[in-house]
Length: 266
Image 1: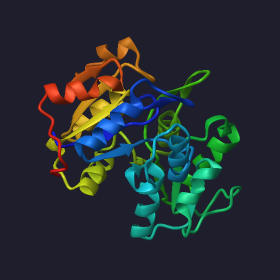
Image 2: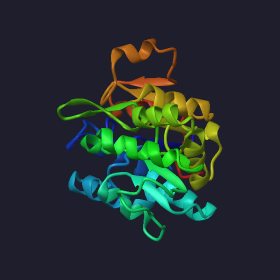
Image 3: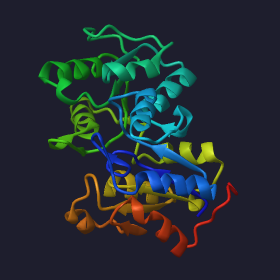
């Protein structure tokens, strides 16, 4: 192993609280010269907000070190010339789509793509039905900013993007283009950015499906942490992690035991 891909929420922090060991582990990664990226399915905030949130917690990173589904979707739309977009994403996340044509928020026809992210409490019947009507008008692409099932907020578990995309796909008959975990293309984009092969990378996450199984299906190792959304029942889902850590604080020891490399050889 030569590089590390980190999930964020549930691994380095939970809600607004750093998790034990996060700062020290990232300092260790940098001291060892291990190439790394932060992969998150967060679609409720842009990369700039993620960078600012981590800075407030004492962790300094750049937007270029963060790979999000919204950034990947905007790059895909620009590259493929897919416009206009119907955005079902948080208001702050819309900055990732600057420069691309977008439909009005009350439009029910005319979308080249319907982009679905985490709207949280913004989802209601009218909003979900508008997305459905757009998908039934012509042949727009359904774009999923990840297929995460749920996440752990300060008040408990909350539905994420995956259930909304699944409902829209079922109703419209359209298969989603998934730009986020667990889609192999998302992991492949991270590997390409770091210039390494899949077998040289490990994904560290709290989601047995999105992080661990997704990484393994893309040819990476997947390590599960028992923080964040982790539930004991996750270990009975038929997915066998390449490692299980009580928290991110155990990563350095695991890395050394399993033969991880240091020194920026990627």
